[in-house]
Length: 416
Image 1 (cartoon, rainbow, N blue to C red):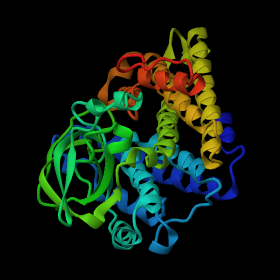
Image 2: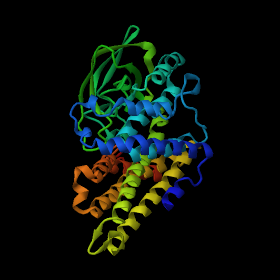
Image 3: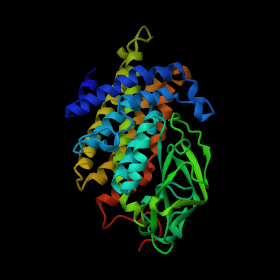
Image 4: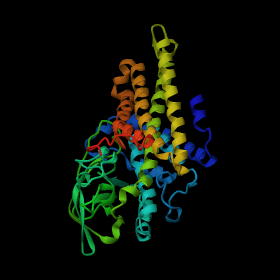
């Protein structure tokens, strides 16, 4: 298919090889599992949804430990094209299943953060553990019941600060609070927790980050959130009640949000690439269907209405990928336009991919709504990205702030 050939354009030999390995993994292991066991995502016991063999295979081919330094056993990537490679690989995993992609890329993103901000002794302690255990996952805990996307407008005053608070007592930090809608929170082994450490200043000057093991007393996994899509990633809610951690598990004091761009910029790129993976799968399945299913005396693709929709689907996929490639290069190069491009990718991908999947459902007719066909799953998965890594409306506000920093509105709190 022409679209397949377009994927490789401009990629390095290393990235192209990793894409091929990952696509084979999705074709031979992930897609067969999700199709044969389509009921399994609805198992209300989160521990029984994704079989451990899937992560074990991902570990064997080296795509689980991206972002971890090679000296600790991670998979090495060319730093000049690291984010571009993340994008290509996450697209292929998401083409198999976006929940699995979400589970795995969190390891990559948190690992990149830790290798940049964690002290050496914590890297030496934890990176080898991540590498040694295929079931070891990581979680980045920022969102709270009373603060999510609106935190990034920003409204940088004390009353907008984190509700989760950390207080220094002797050689320990004591943390109290709650986090919700957290990727991998239900089954992660290690968490990066953000908490307010200075109640007298704005969020950007008074938020710290901490590295917290799952078995820390006072940390409680409250629930697994039963989501509409992406159900092979166990999104969760956690609480902290007088949770004590050693002072050396502090990652960044007071300015943690300023350092979080290391996590969030690649994150926006990866969100867009996971979107594309869902769209590509929807397009592939629809293309097969309309070339084999007969309606009105001829196969569907010969109907003009079908042709128009297929053209729109393919064009949207290529447009999103083009913007994504430009943004990922900007992040790898640390270009000044990287921030606005990342937000544009998040916005455009989440809205365009949902349209692609809507066309897929409609071109399948009644079969598009049948659980056993799997097309409705792709539509459900696509809906999740409208609010992941920020809602589309808040993302639009951020784009305008990037483009017109001197005149754009505050969009939160009173105007100055």
